[in-house]
View (tube, rainbow, N blue to C red):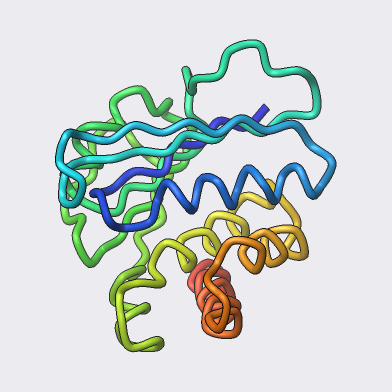
Length: 176
């Protein structure tokens, strides 16, 4: 079983990213549960999307011991990493995260939003870049399934730029 928490601020598309990741797991024939929570602010408040992926029945729908935490902001890092075990993976967006909790040893420091702005002209695609990085780092779902799930969920006319965003995220891990 793999438990993941995607966190950041409202408006960064992390709820959608969690839905896409869960859908990719289903396309791979796995079981998946996705849940979400966010502060009272629609945009700017801390938000998280949790995804559990397993090959056997999932008996509790909330993440209790994350294998991976994606933190797109410093606030999310501070708020959602406390229960990340020492052997867990913390993936941070270096555009916004400068301080890493001391107990975390396995950290991917990635310029996610910076890459989105530089390569795609806007930060809108940072969530898809993050998905590419997660898949490349963990192999939790297949590249084919994550690509199909992204294409199933993005607005018509944005398919190619979203595919490029996914590839950029995978390349960030390959460069490490």
